[in-house]
Image 1: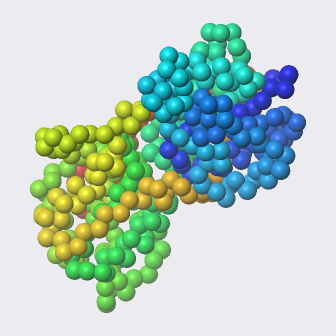
Image 2: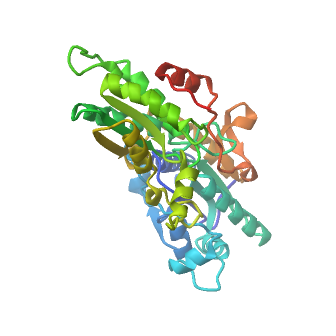
Length: 404
């Protein structure tokens, strides 16, 4: 596919950040610089917000030559935001469009105005389904635009993708976060520590973080003659949205651990038990806040505090500590595993884009986990973690936890 008439290649990052956005932009810039050294590249400022407002950052020659620097950073070099193009009222209220306008139409017109031929969207299921809608509306107008998405989310909950960009790094960083927090067990008698991990509907990140943490724990030396005993630093419970548990039985089990170890460490997915918490809050008249996508604002629910109160009372905890690793983990630069996947994904994304083929490039579960272009229509969120996965069940057995 030959670009003509000063056509541009555009990048856009959207949704919450993940440890892959900066590296993905860097990898895409480097690929295009190799294949089309003179092509003009732009990045829409702060995702779909920038697209609606017509704000973008130009990728100049200095950036092209030094794009590898982006591998060392987290966040997004072109800015990020949560904007849903099908939520017209929200776009109007936030001043992105005027009343009576259709966000999708405004976005499509802006792409035409900016002479964009290829658009790369880097985001989760919402970001890429919005991209699919843009392709449809432009196609109906007879306007050629190729959109190739890259799938990112720390939750790893996008169908049919085996592992999303940024997920590996987030799991590793969550485990590193808890390595320091776990030392807090020495600060008091009967210490309850709850590590709240991101994961609205999917427990993959919590489970994977626990797995990485316990693997790293094996590399440490301990001194049980004083307070430095491995059992005090281990994980004693893992709670995820996909698995139910008997609260009373868990309290009895954890009470014994508390009595023996003088501490209890819990890895908690922020979406675990959320239905019970919401029901309890609604029964006492509390309003449940939601974002532009209709998702419950988990920061207003505070699952970690709810569990802390319930478990703290039953375990006779002397001190309770709730720590959230979400921002720490999602803001990190990509680790080596993610960086390798990002580079491979970028190569295919550029190849497919230059062929004029739209879709999302990812590890396709419907194609034996191979990396390739996936039809936009197959992309959707809400993919759960399978709690029956062998390594997860093995981990639960090792820590003595039984889940339903």
